Length: 221
Image (cartoon, rainbow, N blue to C red):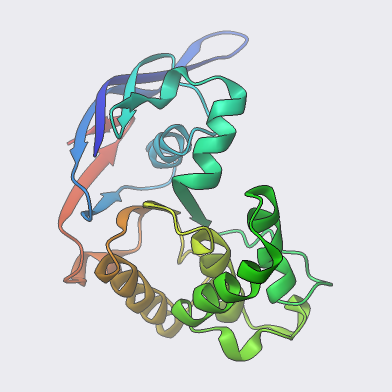
């Protein structure tokens, strides 16, 4: 499903060149849950940003469903992000003054869903994320764990094939982290492919994780 070949990413500074990713090669199967484990600064977020088509690599390929997304134009990259991937991050980036359901509207409107479909899709995503009971509440009244569940719902509301999680439990306590992992388990059961970048050791104990890849200084060990 996802084939990453000889992927490199470099950033030029005023005095040097920083190599964030060094010749990354990964094959990820459909419905597989991959854990990319490493400390902050190891290159995990850069890798996930490229898989999500939020960043272009310096060289190499990221083939998803047989298409090299690293070479997509901006308009086609936008379509890929709307339809193929859902992204869950440690930072909530929600509209605090809007209700939970209203925070899920943007992805649906951008995808031209009919008004008759929107309520059904929102309820389905909120139910999967275990936040349906807070549908009418404003985001600024939610706890940290509830906000993270709202982020999950927004990421899956368009039913993407791939769920990308970048340090998703960094701002959660252990109880909410374990609840979040139960939701990921359910998403895998629904047939989603999961790519999780983290330094949280709790993930290593989860049975739904198929493989653990260790990243250090831009390389996979």
